[in-house]
Image 1 (cartoon, helix red, strand yellow):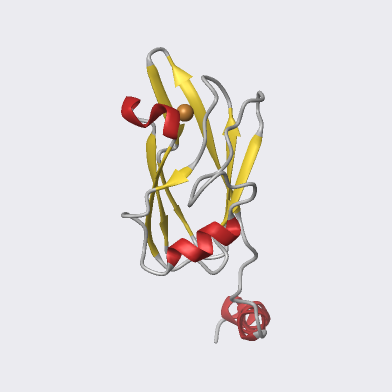
Image 2: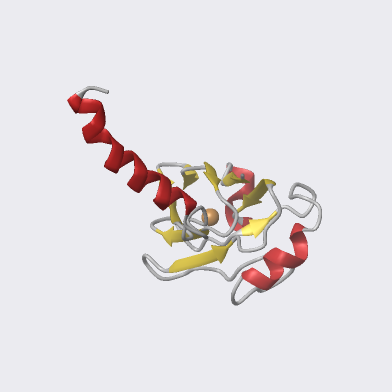
Length: 139
Ligand SMILES: [Cu+2]
């Protein structure tokens, strides 16, 4: 072994220990951000397409053009997801529907703890017909 490869041995060993540590693979939940915006005549979720991991959180920010809300499309979410979402959505005003956000930069956070993998289509009820729709993919 060369001097350089010998120098690498303790570094590689330390890496192996870190990977072997129980629970080391369970990354802490990440909070993702989606802005709710009006841009001219358009109403948008930004980004409108987001990929997250099971257990992550999505925080919606009420930027402009409100009131907005977040409602999941019950026909376009994974099987078994409905009860999980309803339990994870604070202050619901209906099935899979969050409250109307009326204050500047009001936040609304949905946890995907226990959420089945798959695609979660959602929309803003007041602006759905104006294209304010999005999809979250849980991997
Ligand atoms: Cu809206």
